[in-house]
Length: 357
Image (cartoon, rainbow, N blue to C red):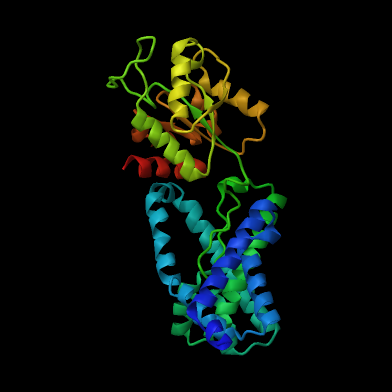
């Protein structure tokens, strides 16, 4: 009966999912390269199998089901690549140069290691696909007639080491890894970038006119001006929820010239969608960008931010603001101001489009 339970596909599948879930919770509680979910999950599964003397073969009956998702998950990586194709074209030289150097260094280093340790031909060629996803590595090694098992072990090990050491190396080199995706080329093509809601704080610098309404909006505010559209607030709320939460910082002149009923009306409308205004920027005549810069200096806890506005003001004078600006004609018509938007801007823009469809 016990043997039947261990060999039930649900055991291996459930253990894998539970181990990874615990790894995620641990990483959110204590963010650190050594608490990378993939590494924690691997250790937990090994410990459980060792302590219970459950044979790996029994675990793999269910674990193998996850392997069937390797190919579709790898193919799915093409979707974000397609969505950001304009960025790839803009950075084509950097991409080609970076990948060419990486291929040269990886190939040379692997060949030298194989020579140094006296590896035979088939073992040596099994190491070369170590820096690609498992789905691709298996296909490559089959063509090269290498050892599939060795390749899988090396690919997974490379992915875990990249997840653990990548952020450390970037920090040593003083590279802002909040805008870089450090990809671990492991079994699921797992993205090991350090960003998510429990680790960093997002702020949405919000204009009102042209974002939550347009000149075609028929709703009026208590003071008789153009009001805000519930549908557009719902889009904003949905995008913020998908992102994992955010603080709303009001940049609009609603915070000053509409001190009376209109500002209260705006707050109540936002509350209907569980949104709160957490702060406001200071006014600088026609220099809204300067107001945001001042706010960021006072609130150093903000790691990521996006700007929603229907006007360019002085944003282009500040490259970081320009990369995070979404120009709107109604939030559903949000578009990148910069040809090279920041990562958080691209993600938030995608969420806006998802909520608008």
